[in-house]
Image 1 (spheres, rainbow, N blue to C red):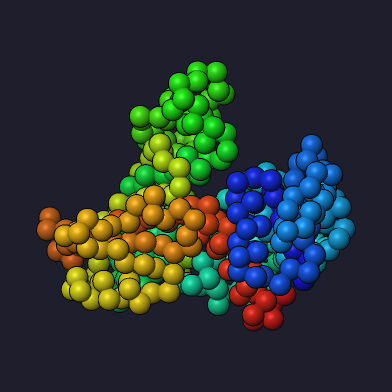
Image 2 (cartoon, one colour):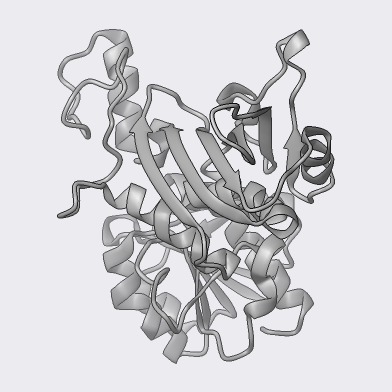
Length: 330
């Protein structure tokens, strides 16, 4: 079981290596891939030094699975080349997600759509994953009519340079190269990714399109506002859900409590609710502040938090690989 990790030195790539090790994925040979300047350097995997190789070298080694986290342009150029060599690509970028012939997968929800013919599999957007983990069981029971989501997203979602910018601003260092247009420390930026022609950001568009594909349901309406906040460790989401059918709050909590991968933290009397500080380093999706919206019928408010580098990226990709292995698809 040869496994390539493309983007092995990046934030998500490093977590992919950590998750592969933690979950005891049966890697017989690791093939770490990074930019040309990193080729020949070493990373540590399972206590052993492993040399970083070039993209071409990795393709020629014909790995069983390649976990990609190197950006959309790299994925568009090289994922098909890996696939042509017989490697199944699980791609963390946005490059393939909305392509009609590519599967967009959250294993707990729709892994059963995968077949042996799928050579490039898309890993959803980090904010989308934690959202649909909660929406899926509720949609099955009550039917989604409309979803309004506002995100509070960690700087880790932008990458290491964004983390460096935040920490430099905290120190009072003005020399650091800015990733964002404005300071992020003591601030909130209502812009994640670039703006499209309709004045929504690409991040917001992902949140409005990807859930429908994953859930296999385009009958509900969804609107999103994505905000970057000075947090390092997890994404938070305030979600308002209007259902087709009436619900009971205790039933909502019971359904979510029995959903694999979801943890309910909802005891406001004791100030217990999900926070990025609590989610960091964990694979579960946490949900709380579950309450009825009294402004209109059949409507619910809740708060969702998850580690965007783990379940929002690396862990979900490794779980897809686990499903492929378990079901003899690789």
